[in-house]
Image (cartoon, rainbow, N blue to C red):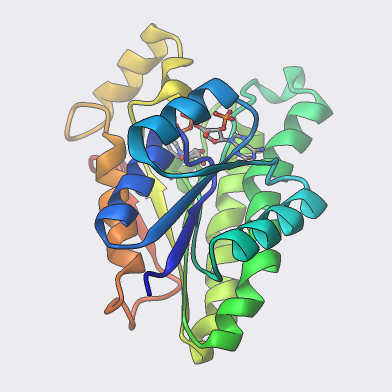
Amino acid sequence: MAKVAIVTGGTRGIGEGICLALKEQGRTVVANYAGNDDKARAFTDRTGIPAYRWDVGDHAATMEGCKRIEAEIGPIDIVVNNAGVTRDGVLHKMSWEDWDDVIRINLGGCFNMAKATFPGMRDRGWGRVVNIGSVNGQAGQYGQVNYAAAKSGIHGFTKALAQEGAKFGVTVNAIAPGYIDTDMVAAVPQPVLDKIIARIPIGRLGHASEIARGVSFFTADDATFVTGSTMSINGGQHMY
Ligand code: NDP
């Protein structure tokens, strides 16, 4: 039977690209999203992939959401922690709420999803977790202390959980995307974006499908000897 994969924040942007790649890989895919019902409905119409709504930063809602998916679809063997938000601003203008939202959703979401699914994977002796970090979690970024801290945390979380899964057939890896052409990046003012693109060796924004390619690698049945690893997919930006 096809293994069940869930992609958080799967209904648009990078998440949609990942959903399509996992479907192509032969998985039974479900997406999660936060609240944009219109986009979620359009996504399901386009792809035939069901979408479940809850906030991954909410622990109880995540436990409940995953329980529902397991009851309706089957045990979750593949988790892609992709849901993420930005609340940019320099430190002296950043509110505590902007800090807390970003840590709670981006980093807390990974913890909540792991609590809901990792024990089952370990008991069944097979699992794949892929966490979507960021080049800005590796290098830092002006105006993003919250986001850089959350994404950096994801890279540490990945290496720690990988050690817990290693003896049980559960691999845990991360991808550090660079700037990808999605709604998130559309929110960056054009002059700032132009400067960012000038620093990308490949000279353009990435596509969701280019991140999905990395996810397909980490989640493959024969990706059995790679864990605790971070793959940079950023047009070469990590070298600068
Ligand atoms: P988008 O803003 O385009 O899409 C975000 C998705 O996450 C949506 O499906 C959204 O649901 C969902 N989401 C947001 N908050 C929550 C929440 N609390 N609970 C559940 N789902 C939530 O993002 P991208 O596709 O650009 O980014 C995807 C991931 O990649 C993020 O983790 C981001 O940080 C990371 N990343 C992106 C980069 C880029 O350049 N785009 C670069 C590096 C990393 P809804 O539609 O309901 O709001």
